[in-house]
Length: 298
Image: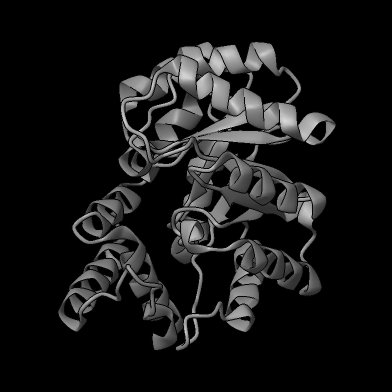
């Protein structure tokens, strides 16, 4: 296992609260970010999948980072930013916003519009981005989430990128939920920060050398996730909660748990095309959550 001194640790894939007009609720967001850090997260990740990051325009991204920094959060230590676009130019601008703000790392998804693309095509796309960034390129965490992007970052492609850009690639976040792929990733690229996105595989991954996670459940149960990250300790309660969560659209479900945790219904709001959970689904999920964590054997 990687020593805790060197490991990436736990980063909360920060859920984003929205106002009734669809704007980001910066007051709730910054308070939530501080709460996550106080609960033991080493950083927060904005603009990720859980945070509905693909719906953020460039100006919103600038305002969000500024709000977090104005709230006293150290960007270099505690802010990771997601980047997701099918356009190379937009990807470049999103990445520059994070690097110019001195953020800790960039969680970089591959282009996702065209399907059936080859490793050669993906390599050319990433290479063009890194070449345009030039000396600015640093601390890139490649984001493998084929359920969203319909693109798998092969283990060999990651190797090619590392060889071509040895000072740029910091790690890989694997949200594939494909355990054989995760095992191969850990075996082949053990010196990278391999981050396990599926909390059900997290403890096992840490025991094999994974350095932590960027995960959505840290919004709700960060203290419960920490032993998985720090010790590779199994937790059947976490596994059961993920299984319950996956019965519903995941992002509204996380927000439903946030509303339950904070007793604040404003957290239920999602940005279209996503929609808030129905009252019946909200009651079912929060009821399951209460049952799981009332069970001392969980």
